[in-house]
Image 1 (cartoon, rainbow, N blue to C red):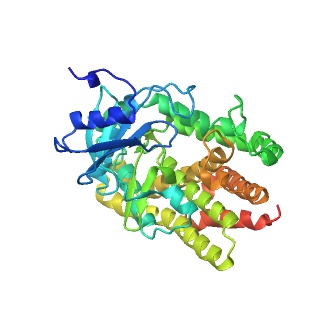
Image 2: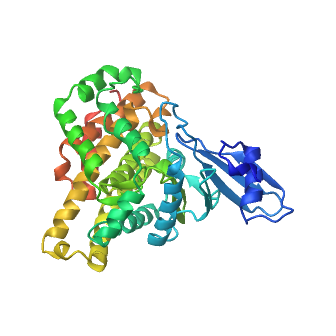
Length: 411
């Protein structure tokens, strides 16, 4: 009988023993070492490798509470969802997710391809690195995984069965609270507002009734729109990257929701990278060059998504009424509307909410951080309130640049 026949939360030494016993990757005489490498909010992530030949694996285990706070009690079924999703995403978008080797429902552990030759995109963007393939890769990933899991493509009973299979209430509740509720009222006191910005946030977020109404509408879209199998947490901290490769990771938040949620998360986190570069790069030429690349990437993410979506629609759509003239254009408009709204929600929640981003929190100069936060939050309000007007990448970029122009460096 194996001690891994009963669930417990593993330490690095346990994970080494687990890899030797449960996986077929290592030779009997392998010299294995392991360490915990995760710094996320939810799960425990370990790397195990053979010192002789470098063969390695990532093992991700779910605990019964989130690492960010014991207040979030979670089902370990999220690891099953993640393993299933990664395998499905590999079928739909080959090469853009890590390979899954094994899912263990007893230990709530998923063993997968080691991507140690990649880096987490958020950290690389904070170091002002460029990734020319990113916009192309991420839009291929999003079109293939989002459109191809909708009612317009799938037989409807199959799609409904998938909705049931990927029901994910505990993780959805985290998003419902942290993304759609708390940033606009701090009703339970968990927000982490930068103190110099507190009074401004109270007035411009908590006190803006028009904004609160639109946030409420967006929350109920998230609660009720089972449009597509979304990643559910598609930010730059969930992407491993190098110049010639993009790998999307961590889909434990996946469920059937509005596909604009994924696209908006990508756009918002590129805006955070823009705000960081604007605040921290001192050399004018270097700043112009890097910000120029980020702005081009923001535009390309939106425009390439639209272009690839329209091409994939023609090839893959099976629903007869989806072929009625004008329906495709309406459908894509709703996606861009939702994308704009979610861009704003993500900008708000990562700036004032419980789960923040280093793009902003690492800005050392108080005035520069204050300006960065207000650019993000003011742009967010525009994306949320005026979301029906956003159709192209240029529309998204114009809001960012117009807002930035209103804030002087001495704000």
